[in-house]
Image (cartoon, rainbow, N blue to C red; front, side):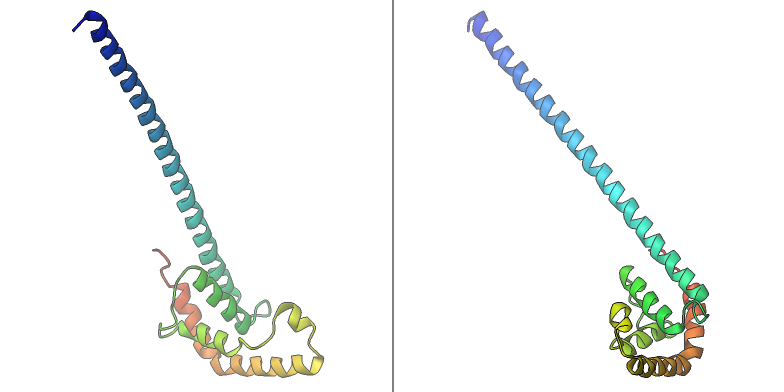
Length: 153
């Protein structure tokens, strides 16, 4: 084998190694970027989860007051629990939030409520008052139980 062929083969090996090193470096950068995106997504998930937990606790503190009645609090709490992917419908005390929400699903909200005639609003209000009176003791127990609930994953 001539010296020229040897150096040509050596040059080819160096080029292949250089390309390989460049490719490995690009893959490491892409992997690091993916890891950073995953960490950012996990941080955003934890932040959103904590916001939902904080919202539940705030709702529980004002539930049953002039600010937020039990019906509205139950619906909001149930929706926040769903957002957290927590199904506490089988929980002995907390399930009352699910029960009240289920009983009031047919009642219009927001814009639909505003467009209802006064007679219909009164009918629905009496119905909600009845549910609230029937479940107020259970709702108070559920409030205490959910305030003590450990939301950690």
